[in-house]
Image 1 (cartoon, rainbow, N blue to C red):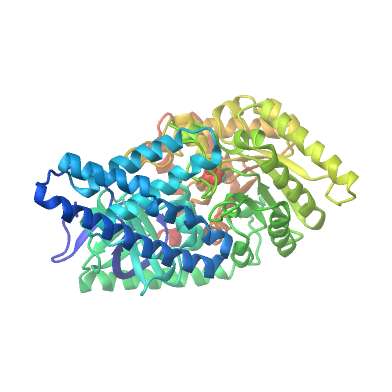
Image 2: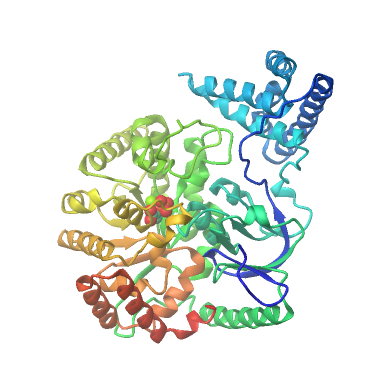
Length: 592
Ligand code: PEP
Ligand code: MG
Protein backbone atom coordinates (compact mmCIF):
# COMPACT_ATOMS: atom_id res chain seq x y z
CA UNK A 1 0.00 0.00 0.00
CA UNK A 2 1.36 3.43 -0.87
CA UNK A 3 1.69 5.97 1.93
CA UNK A 4 -0.27 9.22 1.93
CA UNK A 5 1.92 11.81 0.27
CA UNK A 6 1.93 14.89 -1.93
CA UNK A 7 -0.87 15.07 -4.43
CA UNK A 8 -0.37 12.74 -7.37
CA UNK A 9 2.60 10.82 -6.04
CA UNK A 10 2.61 7.40 -4.40
CA UNK A 11 5.22 6.60 -1.77
CA UNK A 12 6.26 3.02 -1.02
CA UNK A 13 8.51 2.29 1.90
CA UNK A 14 10.91 -0.65 2.25
CA UNK A 15 14.37 -1.21 3.67
CA UNK A 16 17.27 0.85 2.34
CA UNK A 17 20.03 -1.54 1.35
CA UNK A 18 22.20 0.28 -1.14
CA UNK A 19 22.76 4.03 -1.04
CA UNK A 20 22.02 6.46 -3.86
CA UNK A 21 19.12 8.11 -5.61
CA UNK A 22 17.96 7.34 -9.12
CA UNK A 23 14.93 8.06 -11.22
CA UNK A 24 13.55 6.53 -14.35
CA UNK A 25 10.98 4.20 -15.78
CA UNK A 26 9.97 1.09 -13.90
CA UNK A 27 10.34 -2.36 -15.38
CA UNK A 28 8.57 -5.11 -13.46
CA UNK A 29 10.09 -8.57 -13.75
CA UNK A 30 8.05 -11.77 -13.53
CA UNK A 31 5.30 -11.41 -11.00
CA UNK A 32 5.05 -14.16 -8.40
CA UNK A 33 2.97 -17.06 -9.66
CA UNK A 34 0.27 -18.19 -7.31
CA UNK A 35 -0.57 -21.74 -8.34
CA UNK A 36 -2.02 -22.79 -11.65
CA UNK A 37 -5.78 -22.62 -11.83
CA UNK A 38 -7.79 -25.55 -13.18
CA UNK A 39 -10.40 -24.49 -15.67
CA UNK A 40 -12.99 -26.90 -17.04
CA UNK A 41 -13.54 -26.69 -20.77
CA UNK A 42 -16.22 -28.02 -23.10
CA UNK A 43 -15.67 -30.71 -25.77
CA UNK A 44 -15.66 -28.02 -28.44
CA UNK A 45 -12.67 -26.26 -26.84
CA UNK A 46 -10.41 -29.31 -26.62
CA UNK A 47 -8.85 -28.86 -30.06
CA UNK A 48 -8.33 -25.17 -29.41
CA UNK A 49 -6.61 -25.92 -26.08
CA UNK A 50 -4.27 -28.43 -27.70
CA UNK A 51 -3.51 -25.90 -30.39
CA UNK A 52 -2.68 -23.33 -27.69
CA UNK A 53 -0.32 -25.80 -26.06
CA UNK A 54 1.46 -26.53 -29.31
CA UNK A 55 1.80 -22.81 -30.02
CA UNK A 56 3.22 -22.14 -26.52
CA UNK A 57 5.73 -24.97 -26.93
CA UNK A 58 7.04 -23.65 -30.21
CA UNK A 59 7.10 -20.07 -28.90
CA UNK A 60 9.11 -21.25 -25.89
CA UNK A 61 11.45 -23.15 -28.19
CA UNK A 62 12.16 -19.98 -30.16
CA UNK A 63 12.85 -18.06 -26.96
CA UNK A 64 15.17 -20.72 -25.55
CA UNK A 65 17.06 -20.89 -28.86
CA UNK A 66 17.50 -17.12 -28.76
CA UNK A 67 18.77 -17.16 -25.16
CA UNK A 68 21.09 -20.02 -26.09
CA UNK A 69 22.44 -18.04 -29.05
CA UNK A 70 23.13 -15.02 -26.83
CA UNK A 71 24.77 -17.07 -24.11
CA UNK A 72 26.97 -18.90 -26.61
CA UNK A 73 28.05 -15.60 -28.13
CA UNK A 74 28.68 -13.97 -24.76
CA UNK A 75 30.04 -16.80 -22.62
CA UNK A 76 30.94 -19.69 -24.91
CA UNK A 77 29.59 -22.94 -26.30
CA UNK A 78 29.81 -24.89 -23.05
CA UNK A 79 27.61 -22.37 -21.22
CA UNK A 80 25.12 -22.26 -24.09
CA UNK A 81 24.97 -26.06 -23.95
CA UNK A 82 23.02 -25.84 -20.69
CA UNK A 83 19.95 -24.99 -22.75
CA UNK A 84 20.07 -28.24 -24.73
CA UNK A 85 18.30 -29.90 -21.82
CA UNK A 86 15.55 -27.26 -21.95
CA UNK A 87 15.04 -27.88 -25.65
CA UNK A 88 14.80 -31.63 -25.07
CA UNK A 89 11.96 -31.12 -22.58
CA UNK A 90 10.05 -29.05 -25.12
CA UNK A 91 10.32 -31.80 -27.71
CA UNK A 92 9.72 -34.79 -25.44
CA UNK A 93 6.94 -36.77 -27.22
CA UNK A 94 6.01 -38.76 -24.10
CA UNK A 95 5.46 -35.61 -22.05
CA UNK A 96 3.49 -33.84 -24.77
CA UNK A 97 1.34 -36.93 -25.35
CA UNK A 98 0.54 -37.18 -21.64
CA UNK A 99 -0.46 -33.51 -21.41
CA UNK A 100 -2.68 -33.82 -24.48
CA UNK A 101 -4.32 -36.93 -23.01
CA UNK A 102 -5.19 -35.09 -19.79
CA UNK A 103 -6.66 -32.14 -21.70
CA UNK A 104 -8.80 -34.56 -23.79
CA UNK A 105 -9.84 -36.91 -21.02
CA UNK A 106 -10.36 -34.49 -18.13
CA UNK A 107 -11.44 -31.54 -20.28
CA UNK A 108 -9.19 -29.05 -18.55
CA UNK A 109 -7.10 -26.09 -19.64
CA UNK A 110 -3.64 -26.68 -21.11
CA UNK A 111 -1.78 -24.78 -18.33
CA UNK A 112 -3.24 -27.05 -15.70
CA UNK A 113 -2.49 -30.25 -17.62
CA UNK A 114 1.03 -29.15 -18.50
CA UNK A 115 1.78 -28.17 -14.94
CA UNK A 116 0.53 -31.49 -13.54
CA UNK A 117 2.70 -33.54 -15.89
CA UNK A 118 5.78 -31.33 -15.70
CA UNK A 119 5.64 -31.22 -11.91
CA UNK A 120 5.30 -35.01 -11.77
CA UNK A 121 8.43 -35.41 -13.92
CA UNK A 122 10.37 -32.74 -12.00
CA UNK A 123 9.60 -34.28 -8.61
CA UNK A 124 10.51 -37.75 -9.86
CA UNK A 125 13.82 -36.43 -11.18
CA UNK A 126 14.51 -34.49 -7.98
CA UNK A 127 14.15 -37.68 -5.95
CA UNK A 128 16.71 -39.67 -7.97
CA UNK A 129 20.09 -40.42 -6.38
CA UNK A 130 22.04 -39.63 -9.52
CA UNK A 131 23.25 -36.04 -9.41
CA UNK A 132 23.07 -35.48 -13.17
CA UNK A 133 19.46 -36.59 -13.35
CA UNK A 134 18.55 -34.62 -10.27
CA UNK A 135 19.90 -31.56 -11.94
CA UNK A 136 17.48 -32.08 -14.82
CA UNK A 137 14.58 -31.38 -12.48
CA UNK A 138 15.69 -27.75 -12.31
CA UNK A 139 15.79 -27.57 -16.11
CA UNK A 140 12.34 -29.03 -16.14
CA UNK A 141 10.96 -26.40 -13.74
CA UNK A 142 12.75 -23.60 -15.52
CA UNK A 143 11.35 -24.49 -18.90
CA UNK A 144 7.91 -25.21 -17.43
CA UNK A 145 7.71 -21.71 -16.08
CA UNK A 146 8.45 -20.30 -19.56
CA UNK A 147 5.78 -22.49 -21.14
CA UNK A 148 3.27 -21.40 -18.51
CA UNK A 149 4.04 -17.75 -19.14
CA UNK A 150 3.55 -18.21 -22.86
CA UNK A 151 0.30 -20.07 -22.31
CA UNK A 152 -0.91 -17.27 -20.12
CA UNK A 153 0.13 -14.79 -22.78
CA UNK A 154 2.48 -13.16 -20.29
CA UNK A 155 5.58 -11.46 -21.39
CA UNK A 156 8.57 -13.65 -20.61
CA UNK A 157 10.99 -11.74 -18.37
CA UNK A 158 13.25 -9.33 -20.21
CA UNK A 159 16.81 -10.24 -20.88
CA UNK A 160 18.50 -8.39 -18.04
CA UNK A 161 21.77 -8.11 -19.86
CA UNK A 162 20.25 -6.45 -22.90
CA UNK A 163 17.70 -4.03 -21.55
CA UNK A 164 16.51 -1.60 -24.22
CA UNK A 165 16.81 1.50 -22.01
CA UNK A 166 17.96 2.42 -18.49
CA UNK A 167 15.28 1.53 -15.94
CA UNK A 168 14.49 0.77 -12.31
CA UNK A 169 13.91 -2.96 -11.92
CA UNK A 170 11.10 -4.12 -9.66
CA UNK A 171 10.89 -7.79 -8.86
CA UNK A 172 9.46 -10.12 -6.27
CA UNK A 173 13.01 -11.24 -5.50
CA UNK A 174 16.41 -11.21 -7.14
CA UNK A 175 18.95 -13.89 -6.49
CA UNK A 176 22.51 -12.85 -5.63
CA UNK A 177 23.65 -14.42 -8.91
CA UNK A 178 21.14 -12.44 -11.00
CA UNK A 179 22.15 -9.27 -9.21
CA UNK A 180 25.79 -9.94 -10.01
CA UNK A 181 24.85 -10.02 -13.70
CA UNK A 182 22.95 -6.73 -13.82
CA UNK A 183 24.23 -4.27 -16.35
CA UNK A 184 25.08 -1.20 -14.30
CA UNK A 185 24.63 1.10 -17.28
CA UNK A 186 21.06 -0.05 -17.77
CA UNK A 187 19.85 -0.85 -14.27
CA UNK A 188 19.52 2.48 -12.47
CA UNK A 189 18.35 0.83 -9.27
CA UNK A 190 16.15 -1.98 -8.08
CA UNK A 191 13.42 -2.74 -5.61
CA UNK A 192 12.19 -6.13 -4.41
CA UNK A 193 9.16 -7.33 -2.45
CA UNK A 194 11.26 -9.47 -0.12
CA UNK A 195 14.78 -9.30 1.29
CA UNK A 196 16.72 -7.56 4.01
CA UNK A 197 19.88 -5.60 4.78
CA UNK A 198 22.15 -8.62 5.03
CA UNK A 199 20.84 -10.76 2.18
CA UNK A 200 23.59 -11.42 -0.32
CA UNK A 201 21.49 -9.65 -2.96
CA UNK A 202 21.69 -6.47 -0.87
CA UNK A 203 25.40 -6.96 -0.27
CA UNK A 204 25.97 -7.38 -4.01
CA UNK A 205 23.96 -4.23 -4.81
CA UNK A 206 26.12 -2.22 -2.41
CA UNK A 207 29.32 -3.48 -3.86
CA UNK A 208 28.07 -2.71 -7.39
CA UNK A 209 26.85 0.71 -6.18
CA UNK A 210 23.35 0.15 -7.52
CA UNK A 211 20.80 2.01 -5.35
CA UNK A 212 18.35 -0.53 -3.95
CA UNK A 213 15.34 -0.86 -1.69
CA UNK A 214 14.10 -4.28 -0.54
CA UNK A 215 11.21 -5.52 1.58
CA UNK A 216 8.65 -3.53 -0.44
CA UNK A 217 6.08 -6.30 0.21
CA UNK A 218 3.84 -6.17 -2.89
CA UNK A 219 5.68 -3.77 -5.19
CA UNK A 220 5.95 -6.31 -8.00
CA UNK A 221 2.18 -6.63 -8.03
CA UNK A 222 1.20 -2.99 -7.76
CA UNK A 223 3.83 -1.30 -9.90
CA UNK A 224 3.32 -1.08 -13.64
CA UNK A 225 5.87 -1.10 -16.42
CA UNK A 226 6.62 2.40 -17.60
CA UNK A 227 5.64 4.17 -14.35
CA UNK A 228 8.03 7.03 -13.70
CA UNK A 229 9.59 6.72 -10.26
CA UNK A 230 12.29 7.96 -7.95
CA UNK A 231 14.19 5.42 -5.86
CA UNK A 232 15.88 6.62 -2.67
CA UNK A 233 18.38 4.01 -1.52
CA UNK A 234 19.38 6.12 1.49
CA UNK A 235 15.99 5.98 3.13
CA UNK A 236 14.38 2.94 1.52
CA UNK A 237 11.66 4.72 -0.43
CA UNK A 238 10.26 4.49 -3.94
CA UNK A 239 8.09 7.39 -5.08
CA UNK A 240 5.95 6.80 -8.15
CA UNK A 241 5.05 9.95 -10.09
CA UNK A 242 7.13 12.25 -7.88
CA UNK A 243 5.94 15.85 -7.77
CA UNK A 244 8.19 18.73 -8.85
CA UNK A 245 8.64 19.65 -5.19
CA UNK A 246 9.84 16.09 -4.37
CA UNK A 247 12.22 16.08 -7.34
CA UNK A 248 13.57 19.46 -6.25
CA UNK A 249 14.19 18.25 -2.68
CA UNK A 250 15.92 15.15 -3.95
CA UNK A 251 18.04 17.26 -6.25
CA UNK A 252 19.29 19.13 -3.17
CA UNK A 253 19.91 15.89 -1.30
CA UNK A 254 21.96 14.53 -4.19
CA UNK A 255 23.99 17.76 -4.33
CA UNK A 256 24.73 17.55 -0.60
CA UNK A 257 25.78 13.96 -1.10
CA UNK A 258 28.10 14.93 -3.97
CA UNK A 259 29.76 17.57 -1.80
CA UNK A 260 30.25 15.03 0.98
CA UNK A 261 31.70 12.46 -1.45
CA UNK A 262 34.20 15.08 -2.57
CA UNK A 263 35.24 15.68 1.04
CA UNK A 264 35.55 11.93 1.62
CA UNK A 265 37.60 11.47 -1.51
CA UNK A 266 40.29 13.73 -0.02
CA UNK A 267 40.86 11.19 2.76
CA UNK A 268 41.85 8.42 0.37
CA UNK A 269 45.54 8.31 1.26
CA UNK A 270 45.12 9.23 4.93
CA UNK A 271 45.18 6.72 7.79
CA UNK A 272 42.15 5.69 9.87
CA UNK A 273 43.35 7.06 13.21
CA UNK A 274 41.16 8.46 15.97
CA UNK A 275 41.70 11.96 17.37
CA UNK A 276 43.43 10.41 20.38
CA UNK A 277 45.82 8.37 18.26
CA UNK A 278 44.22 4.92 18.09
CA UNK A 279 44.93 3.32 14.68
CA UNK A 280 42.21 1.22 13.12
CA UNK A 281 42.76 -1.26 10.32
CA UNK A 282 40.09 -0.42 7.76
CA UNK A 283 39.68 -2.89 4.96
CA UNK A 284 37.22 -3.72 2.21
CA UNK A 285 34.87 -6.58 1.42
CA UNK A 286 34.87 -7.70 -2.19
CA UNK A 287 32.99 -10.23 -4.26
CA UNK A 288 34.89 -10.39 -7.54
CA UNK A 289 38.36 -9.64 -8.87
CA UNK A 290 37.04 -6.63 -10.76
CA UNK A 291 36.34 -4.99 -7.37
CA UNK A 292 40.08 -4.37 -6.88
CA UNK A 293 39.79 -0.95 -8.48
CA UNK A 294 37.22 0.15 -5.92
CA UNK A 295 39.39 -1.13 -3.05
CA UNK A 296 42.23 1.06 -4.24
CA UNK A 297 40.07 4.11 -4.80
CA UNK A 298 38.15 3.89 -1.51
CA UNK A 299 41.35 4.16 0.50
CA UNK A 300 41.07 0.81 2.34
CA UNK A 301 44.06 -1.00 3.85
CA UNK A 302 43.53 -4.12 1.73
CA UNK A 303 40.76 -6.69 1.64
CA UNK A 304 39.34 -8.06 4.88
CA UNK A 305 36.88 -10.41 3.19
CA UNK A 306 36.93 -11.77 -0.33
CA UNK A 307 33.70 -13.73 -0.83
CA UNK A 308 34.91 -16.35 -3.30
CA UNK A 309 31.44 -17.76 -4.01
CA UNK A 310 30.93 -15.47 -6.98
CA UNK A 311 33.77 -17.23 -8.79
CA UNK A 312 31.63 -20.35 -8.61
CA UNK A 313 28.19 -19.09 -9.53
CA UNK A 314 26.89 -17.93 -12.93
CA UNK A 315 28.97 -20.48 -14.82
CA UNK A 316 28.48 -23.90 -16.35
CA UNK A 317 31.29 -25.72 -14.53
CA UNK A 318 33.28 -25.42 -11.34
CA UNK A 319 36.27 -23.11 -11.70
CA UNK A 320 39.46 -25.14 -11.95
CA UNK A 321 42.42 -24.73 -9.60
CA UNK A 322 44.19 -22.77 -12.37
CA UNK A 323 41.29 -20.40 -12.89
CA UNK A 324 40.99 -19.76 -9.18
CA UNK A 325 44.71 -19.30 -8.84
CA UNK A 326 44.61 -16.67 -11.60
CA UNK A 327 41.74 -14.82 -9.88
CA UNK A 328 43.37 -14.84 -6.42
CA UNK A 329 46.71 -13.86 -7.84
CA UNK A 330 45.23 -10.94 -9.74
CA UNK A 331 43.81 -9.48 -6.54
CA UNK A 332 46.81 -10.26 -4.35
CA UNK A 333 49.28 -8.84 -6.88
CA UNK A 334 47.22 -5.68 -7.45
CA UNK A 335 47.02 -4.92 -3.74
CA UNK A 336 50.42 -6.09 -2.59
CA UNK A 337 51.79 -5.33 0.03
CA UNK A 338 48.32 -4.81 1.47
CA UNK A 339 46.69 -7.97 2.82
CA UNK A 340 43.92 -9.88 1.09
CA UNK A 341 41.87 -12.21 3.27
CA UNK A 342 40.42 -14.90 1.03
CA UNK A 343 37.46 -16.66 2.55
CA UNK A 344 37.03 -20.25 1.48
CA UNK A 345 33.85 -21.18 -0.31
CA UNK A 346 30.64 -20.24 1.50
CA UNK A 347 28.06 -21.83 -0.78
CA UNK A 348 24.59 -22.65 0.46
CA UNK A 349 22.25 -20.39 2.45
CA UNK A 350 21.14 -17.99 -0.27
CA UNK A 351 23.98 -18.70 -2.70
CA UNK A 352 23.76 -21.69 -5.01
CA UNK A 353 25.58 -22.95 -8.06
CA UNK A 354 23.77 -22.85 -11.36
CA UNK A 355 25.29 -26.14 -12.50
CA UNK A 356 25.47 -28.19 -9.32
CA UNK A 357 22.22 -29.24 -7.80
CA UNK A 358 22.30 -28.83 -4.08
CA UNK A 359 19.55 -30.77 -2.37
CA UNK A 360 16.54 -28.63 -1.49
CA UNK A 361 16.66 -28.07 2.24
CA UNK A 362 14.01 -26.97 4.70
CA UNK A 363 16.49 -24.63 6.40
CA UNK A 364 19.28 -23.84 3.96
CA UNK A 365 21.00 -21.46 6.39
CA UNK A 366 21.21 -24.29 8.91
CA UNK A 367 22.13 -26.84 6.31
CA UNK A 368 24.83 -27.97 3.98
CA UNK A 369 26.65 -24.70 3.81
CA UNK A 370 30.17 -23.26 3.78
CA UNK A 371 32.83 -25.27 5.62
CA UNK A 372 30.37 -28.17 6.07
CA UNK A 373 30.02 -28.45 2.30
CA UNK A 374 33.77 -28.08 1.72
CA UNK A 375 34.79 -30.72 4.28
CA UNK A 376 32.58 -33.21 2.43
CA UNK A 377 33.24 -32.11 -1.14
CA UNK A 378 36.96 -32.68 -0.82
CA UNK A 379 37.89 -32.20 -4.47
CA UNK A 380 36.19 -28.81 -4.58
CA UNK A 381 37.96 -27.78 -1.38
CA UNK A 382 41.30 -29.15 -2.50
CA UNK A 383 41.27 -27.12 -5.72
CA UNK A 384 40.46 -23.96 -3.80
CA UNK A 385 42.98 -24.49 -1.01
CA UNK A 386 45.77 -25.27 -3.47
CA UNK A 387 44.87 -22.18 -5.52
CA UNK A 388 44.94 -19.95 -2.43
CA UNK A 389 48.21 -21.47 -1.22
CA UNK A 390 49.82 -20.92 -4.62
CA UNK A 391 48.63 -17.31 -4.77
CA UNK A 392 50.11 -16.73 -1.32
CA UNK A 393 53.60 -17.03 -2.81
CA UNK A 394 53.10 -13.75 -4.63
CA UNK A 395 51.11 -11.46 -2.40
CA UNK A 396 50.09 -10.76 1.16
CA UNK A 397 47.43 -13.45 1.23
CA UNK A 398 45.57 -14.67 4.31
CA UNK A 399 42.79 -17.21 4.41
CA UNK A 400 39.78 -17.85 6.62
CA UNK A 401 37.07 -20.47 6.94
CA UNK A 402 33.39 -19.51 7.12
CA UNK A 403 30.80 -20.98 9.50
CA UNK A 404 33.15 -22.63 11.95
CA UNK A 405 30.94 -24.09 14.67
CA UNK A 406 33.62 -25.70 16.81
CA UNK A 407 37.13 -26.97 17.11
CA UNK A 408 36.69 -30.13 15.05
CA UNK A 409 35.91 -28.27 11.86
CA UNK A 410 38.86 -25.94 12.33
CA UNK A 411 41.18 -28.88 12.98
CA UNK A 412 39.89 -30.84 10.01
CA UNK A 413 40.27 -27.90 7.66
CA UNK A 414 43.76 -27.15 8.97
CA UNK A 415 44.73 -30.81 8.51
CA UNK A 416 43.68 -30.62 4.87
CA UNK A 417 45.72 -27.46 4.39
CA UNK A 418 48.74 -29.26 5.86
CA UNK A 419 48.17 -32.16 3.45
CA UNK A 420 47.95 -29.88 0.39
CA UNK A 421 50.98 -27.90 1.51
CA UNK A 422 52.87 -31.20 1.54
CA UNK A 423 51.62 -31.97 -2.00
CA UNK A 424 52.82 -28.59 -3.23
CA UNK A 425 56.20 -29.08 -1.59
CA UNK A 426 56.57 -32.41 -3.39
CA UNK A 427 55.58 -30.73 -6.65
CA UNK A 428 58.06 -27.92 -5.90
CA UNK A 429 55.33 -25.32 -6.24
CA UNK A 430 55.95 -22.28 -4.03
CA UNK A 431 53.55 -20.97 -1.39
CA UNK A 432 53.82 -18.84 1.73
CA UNK A 433 54.85 -21.23 4.50
CA UNK A 434 53.61 -18.71 7.05
CA UNK A 435 50.19 -18.17 5.45
CA UNK A 436 47.95 -16.90 8.24
CA UNK A 437 44.70 -18.81 8.64
CA UNK A 438 41.78 -17.38 10.56
CA UNK A 439 38.36 -18.52 11.65
CA UNK A 440 35.15 -16.66 11.07
CA UNK A 441 33.09 -16.32 14.19
CA UNK A 442 29.49 -16.35 13.06
CA UNK A 443 27.85 -19.10 15.09
CA UNK A 444 27.20 -18.68 18.83
CA UNK A 445 28.83 -22.05 19.57
CA UNK A 446 32.08 -20.69 18.11
CA UNK A 447 31.93 -17.76 20.53
CA UNK A 448 31.48 -20.15 23.43
CA UNK A 449 34.64 -22.05 22.47
CA UNK A 450 36.50 -19.01 21.16
CA UNK A 451 39.27 -19.58 23.73
CA UNK A 452 40.05 -22.97 22.15
CA UNK A 453 39.71 -21.67 18.59
CA UNK A 454 42.01 -18.74 19.38
CA UNK A 455 44.84 -21.17 20.14
CA UNK A 456 44.60 -22.60 16.63
CA UNK A 457 43.75 -19.57 14.51
CA UNK A 458 45.91 -16.58 13.64
CA UNK A 459 42.97 -14.19 13.65
CA UNK A 460 39.22 -14.03 14.07
CA UNK A 461 36.80 -12.33 11.76
CA UNK A 462 33.32 -11.85 13.17
CA UNK A 463 30.60 -12.37 10.58
CA UNK A 464 27.88 -10.39 12.29
CA UNK A 465 25.38 -11.00 9.48
CA UNK A 466 25.23 -14.64 10.42
CA UNK A 467 26.12 -14.25 14.10
CA UNK A 468 23.00 -12.12 14.57
CA UNK A 469 20.86 -14.46 12.47
CA UNK A 470 21.95 -17.53 14.40
CA UNK A 471 21.97 -16.14 17.92
CA UNK A 472 18.62 -14.37 17.65
CA UNK A 473 16.98 -16.97 15.38
CA UNK A 474 16.13 -14.27 12.84
CA UNK A 475 16.35 -15.34 9.20
CA UNK A 476 18.57 -12.71 7.61
CA UNK A 477 16.52 -12.79 4.38
CA UNK A 478 13.07 -12.33 5.83
CA UNK A 479 11.71 -8.80 5.63
CA UNK A 480 8.79 -9.67 7.92
CA UNK A 481 11.08 -10.11 10.89
CA UNK A 482 13.73 -7.59 9.87
CA UNK A 483 12.74 -5.45 12.88
CA UNK A 484 13.99 -8.25 15.15
CA UNK A 485 17.38 -8.26 13.49
CA UNK A 486 19.05 -5.99 16.03
CA UNK A 487 22.83 -5.55 15.90
CA UNK A 488 22.71 -3.62 19.19
CA UNK A 489 20.85 -6.34 21.08
CA UNK A 490 22.68 -6.79 24.41
CA UNK A 491 23.27 -10.45 23.49
CA UNK A 492 25.14 -9.43 20.35
CA UNK A 493 27.19 -6.83 22.20
CA UNK A 494 28.23 -9.47 24.75
CA UNK A 495 28.99 -12.10 22.11
CA UNK A 496 31.30 -9.65 20.35
CA UNK A 497 32.98 -8.73 23.62
CA UNK A 498 33.50 -12.40 24.53
CA UNK A 499 35.07 -13.04 21.12
CA UNK A 500 37.40 -10.08 21.46
CA UNK A 501 38.45 -11.11 24.98
CA UNK A 502 39.18 -14.69 23.92
CA UNK A 503 41.21 -13.52 20.94
CA UNK A 504 43.20 -10.90 22.81
CA UNK A 505 43.98 -13.37 25.60
CA UNK A 506 45.82 -15.38 22.94
CA UNK A 507 47.30 -12.28 21.32
CA UNK A 508 45.41 -12.58 18.03
CA UNK A 509 43.50 -9.72 16.32
CA UNK A 510 39.77 -9.53 15.68
CA UNK A 511 38.07 -8.06 12.68
CA UNK A 512 34.37 -7.55 12.00
CA UNK A 513 33.41 -8.11 8.35
CA UNK A 514 29.60 -8.28 8.59
CA UNK A 515 27.47 -5.36 7.44
CA UNK A 516 27.51 -3.99 10.98
CA UNK A 517 31.13 -2.91 10.44
CA UNK A 518 30.11 -0.62 7.57
CA UNK A 519 27.51 1.30 9.57
CA UNK A 520 28.92 4.62 10.82
CA UNK A 521 26.47 4.46 13.73
CA UNK A 522 27.71 1.06 14.88
CA UNK A 523 31.42 1.22 14.07
CA UNK A 524 32.32 3.18 17.27
CA UNK A 525 30.59 0.52 19.38
CA UNK A 526 32.67 -2.21 17.73
CA UNK A 527 35.89 -0.25 18.21
CA UNK A 528 34.98 0.46 21.82
CA UNK A 529 34.46 -3.27 22.37
CA UNK A 530 38.07 -3.79 21.27
CA UNK A 531 37.63 -4.86 17.65
CA UNK A 532 40.93 -4.21 15.83
CA UNK A 533 39.76 -4.13 12.22
CA UNK A 534 36.61 -3.16 10.34
CA UNK A 535 36.00 -4.58 6.90
CA UNK A 536 33.17 -3.11 4.87
CA UNK A 537 31.92 -2.72 1.31
CA UNK A 538 34.14 -0.20 -0.55
CA UNK A 539 31.43 2.50 -0.75
CA UNK A 540 31.28 2.52 3.07
CA UNK A 541 35.00 2.78 3.69
CA UNK A 542 35.40 6.56 3.10
CA UNK A 543 32.56 7.44 5.52
CA UNK A 544 34.01 5.10 8.13
CA UNK A 545 37.41 6.72 7.81
CA UNK A 546 35.84 10.18 8.02
CA UNK A 547 34.09 9.19 11.24
CA UNK A 548 37.08 7.45 12.82
CA UNK A 549 39.25 10.50 12.20
CA UNK A 550 36.74 12.62 14.15
CA UNK A 551 36.21 10.15 16.97
CA UNK A 552 38.12 9.60 20.20
CA UNK A 553 38.65 5.96 21.15
CA UNK A 554 37.86 7.02 24.72
CA UNK A 555 34.33 8.01 23.57
CA UNK A 556 33.93 4.69 21.79
CA UNK A 557 35.02 2.82 24.92
CA UNK A 558 32.54 4.76 27.03
CA UNK A 559 29.79 3.78 24.61
CA UNK A 560 30.85 0.13 24.80
CA UNK A 561 30.94 0.22 28.60
CA UNK A 562 27.44 1.58 28.61
CA UNK A 563 26.29 -1.06 26.09
CA UNK A 564 27.73 -3.89 28.18
CA UNK A 565 25.63 -2.91 31.15
CA UNK A 566 22.52 -1.78 29.29
CA UNK A 567 19.55 -4.10 28.96
CA UNK A 568 17.86 -2.48 25.99
CA UNK A 569 18.81 -2.74 22.31
CA UNK A 570 17.06 0.51 21.46
CA UNK A 571 18.83 2.44 24.20
CA UNK A 572 22.19 1.18 22.99
CA UNK A 573 21.28 2.13 19.44
CA UNK A 574 20.14 5.55 20.48
CA UNK A 575 23.41 6.23 22.37
CA UNK A 576 25.40 4.97 19.38
CA UNK A 577 23.42 7.31 17.09
CA UNK A 578 23.98 10.28 19.33
CA UNK A 579 27.71 9.70 19.38
CA UNK A 580 28.04 9.17 15.61
CA UNK A 581 25.90 12.22 14.81
CA UNK A 582 27.78 14.47 17.15
CA UNK A 583 31.13 13.34 15.78
CA UNK A 584 30.28 13.41 12.06
CA UNK A 585 26.93 15.16 11.43
CA UNK A 586 27.51 15.55 7.71
CA UNK A 587 27.37 11.77 7.25
CA UNK A 588 23.71 11.80 8.20
CA UNK A 589 22.45 14.56 5.96
CA UNK A 590 20.89 12.15 3.50
CA UNK A 591 18.45 10.88 6.12
CA UNK A 592 14.87 12.04 5.56
C1 PEP B 1 28.71 -12.52 7.82
O1 PEP B 1 27.99 -13.50 8.02
O2 PEP B 1 28.67 -11.49 8.53
C2 PEP B 1 29.64 -12.50 6.68
C3 PEP B 1 30.52 -11.54 6.54
O3 PEP B 1 29.51 -13.49 5.76
P1 PEP B 1 28.33 -13.54 4.68
O4 PEP B 1 27.58 -12.25 4.74
O5 PEP B 1 28.95 -13.74 3.34
O6 PEP B 1 27.54 -14.72 5.13
MG1 MG C 1 28.46 -15.31 6.98
